[in-house]
Image (tube, rainbow, N blue to C red; front, top):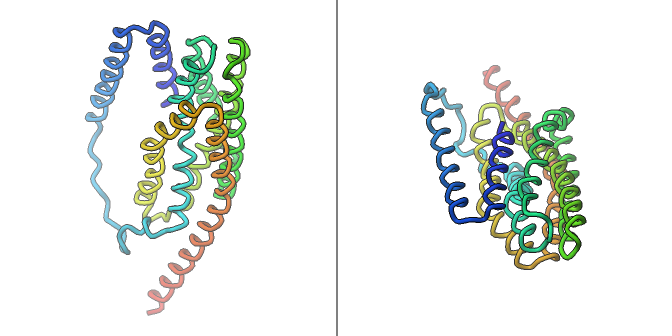
Length: 272
């Protein structure tokens, strides 16, 4: 559903970029504000949900779980990839390539159509933390390949730039499918049942990190620096993906150790 909304917004954004007038951009901002107001109107109509009883144990336990924090950081670095298509590719397309500007919307539409059609299918077999770690690794390699293709789009004829851009977006989107599925799996599977909300809240800090740091980092490397920056960004994604399986195994060992300790403590309480 999120990607359906993104695809509709991409069409309107593409119109504003193609027209390129001050009024068009003002209408784009106004439309965005109205969409947020409409969402708020729907949310306030939801019934309130009373809180449940808090589980016993130390508070902020998720912030003490170092393997889970490492996974949060790695996922946050990988989540910068969401800003590649929404921030960096439009700027790169307009400033560094001869591809038609309407491809700003075209690339987003290709991305969202693939995600809408294949996200559930791509997630089907990523049903264990180990599979999630391997999916992180595959996504890092896919992002490296897409960044390399994007770097090659500068200084070539418009038809070739457009073809490479679309190929890069398809490869990037495949990596996005794997990354999203991996994040869903490891964040839930490695969170204790009695503290799921707390753990998922901590895991969301990684996405917040990417929102705060990602646009500036990508613009500095890929737009300001240019072609070499794309290779650096691709290498960052690849190295992060390669590190993820090791972090998952560390988190699994810690999870099993904690579960064993809880089982022994429960047996002692029953015996007492």
